[in-house]
Image (cartoon, rainbow, N blue to C red; front, side, top):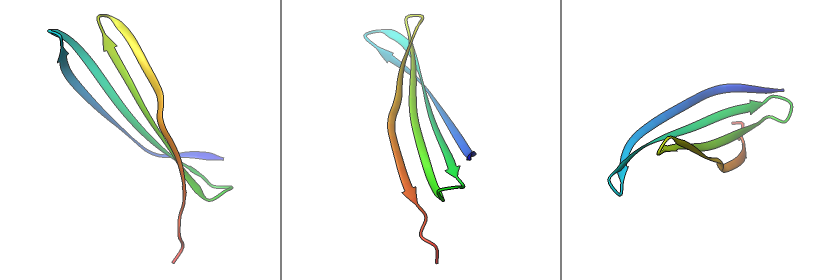
Length: 68
């Protein structure tokens, strides 16, 4: 079972060759209770000249917690 722990959205307003574009950077952390591991999805969505370009995922990593 995957549970969403938190998510973070960072929007950047940029200029490239005199054109404006918006970059939305979304990081989503989920926790897999069955396997006791975290999964990080890192996604970037760019809107440029009215067209939405999506890179998904930028990175996908798994890390297991060390229990003290």
